[in-house]
Image (cartoon, each protein chain N blue to C red):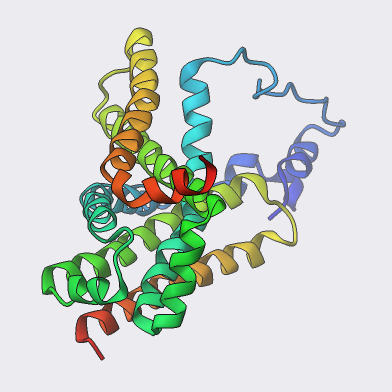
Length: 126
Length: 150
């Protein structure tokens, strides 16, 4: 049976189905956000470099700083997850590919969750 | 799904000839835009792991005085300062590389001269921004460096 199918017949319907730009687009959306958020990070780092813990807490008790901190964690982790996924897909083949992709997702979400929790705690001052 | 070799073999009942390979890294002479393309990926991967540094700093500040003290101490060691300097450059380089890609997304700047110019500007810009940031932070690290080594 298979012998009579052309290669085109075999792949027809398995293509992108007019979807698949989400990755590209999300990478650009988070990249654009990251320009602003990294500017915030540079400002934060310069403000708080060498500062005692009390100043760090005071800084993030400001709502605007806490919001930017949370946004930074989310946007950066989404961006870095997509980027690392592309790197893994380019270089890793075979059995370790899917575990690596999973690990990438878990790592990115873990970094985001831990950072968001830290900023939230600093903001609340508890 | 059958792979391409099998299905092609089914059509033309003869073994596949070795296919020509498309040229890859080892074939090309290094150009500045190629170097910057590689560096964009390398710095992206470095920033991926560098995110842990930022997370560690914020978590320690949220956690306790002793954790914050440990992270602050580590950041102020020579290795810590070198890592932070490298991380600064890596982030700045990836940021400017991203802006370059945004320009290319508008289908502008693909002339060979412009491509080379963008590539050099990315490198010079990232080094300049890193220098400016560390110059602004000079009061923080001047004692750490000069006190220990001079």
